[in-house]
Length: 270
Image (spheres, rainbow, N blue to C red):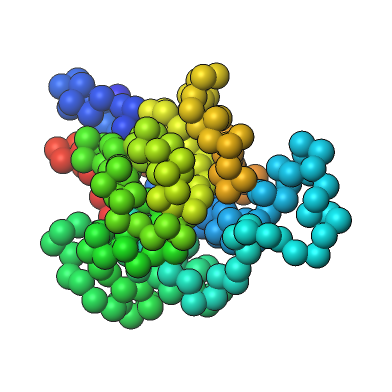
């Protein structure tokens, strides 16, 4: 009668089959808003201060940076006044990232649906076209659900539009970023680096990277690549919030309350 998605994304559920069988669907849309906002900023800070490069060098026994007072060509800069571009930047998590980024003195631009009016918002975010976002951003992060329209959204054409000093961050869903395109972009130095926390089609748990994934290769090849195993959402408070909200959703269904997914459109009810 009811499927409770213990997470935000429900692309793993066959909506049409639910409609045919009269099964209701609900998800937990905001349990990880704070944690994901924290992690996006964590990755910005790590990429901006050569943290990954320093750790990789020391791990492989290279103590060069421990013994000299300069960083050579490593990216190492302040984030104040840098531009953070959020694709799909008007959702719950994106707004939390925006709040944190603005507090750190960054500029935030966002793209949304083509029908969304462009211009400055009251919260300090400038809504722009996605092409403008690619061209202007120092950091780019997609914050969209995975579906037929967003799979491969950040592709070779997108990387061609980015600045060579820009960094790509993905904490949403792996296939939103075209894997071949990002490997190519890193090797051709179309972008300065990347931090990826998600891979593959799944969400909970996500599939591990195949052992022969080229992402492991670029991780070894470049100091400016960070790979983490879908840890963005997994802070203790967020995990407890999932359990609590799933229980609340079941209780609501038992009381006859409406669920938060519109089964006709397949879209969240806000």
